[in-house]
Image (cartoon, rainbow, N blue to C red; front, side):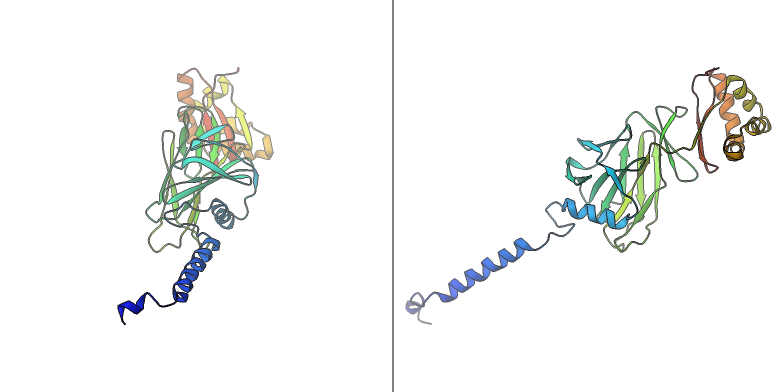
Amino acid sequence: MNPELKHSLPGPRRVLAASAAIAVVAAAAIMPTPAFAAPGRPDPANLVRIVERSDPHTRTTGRVTTSHRTVRGAGLDMAIAGRGEAVAVGNQAVFSGTGVDYVSRGVEGGFQVAAVIGDANQNVQQYRFPGKYLELTEAGYVIVRDGGSTAEPVAAIDPAWARDANGAKVSTRFEVKGDTLTQVSDVTANTPLPVVADPRVRSAWYGWSIDFTREETRKIAKSASACTAVAGLLTLAAGTVAGAVSAHCGALTVFADLAVENGKCVSLKIVATYLVTWWMPKCYK
């Protein structure tokens, strides 16, 4: 083409190209944002929908208090690894993270913090309970104590669970050290993402609370058979509580002996035979 004629051509092509560019931009603006779009933040409402889809049977009972990466519920503080302040979505609060986001909500008897894992490399989450002591039981529950290893249990955390984007179970477990709860999930490059994994904290978690007297504590400390005899005196719930205590007399005898040495008594909180926990309060008589 003659260079001199190039600039004399009419401009419809240029106008058409510009119009097409505008149309592309407009279309992109109205398209829904994906749950894990990079580099922008995930859509909080979409994260809530993901959690509700993974855990459809849990209903919220109200929003928990959140501040500076801390969730407050059921009289407890839980520090999480989210960024900045939470965004409210209905009764739920969403913290953004790096490869994993968190949805917190009040549930019956306590609260729940669900990690929404969008990066297979972020398969470990840590949660701190300042001033508390955590104990992992054989049944997978975590007992939250108000202080040291012999202090009163104030809450329990349900056994760990996790599900992938298709609703399939993902192998997961809890680990504890002092006041820190760690959840480790088997998330790999082949796992359909996102994976939802949560600790659910229960404050009203036990069915019975029993305080033994100084004399009863001394009897329990003598031997497992003596412990069983004391348990047999319990008539609550048609023997259910007695059976739960008897099933744990081996360990309870050792604990009671330690209580006697420290001038204290034994108290129990019982959910069922598989979950009995004890602590050392001052003797009331």
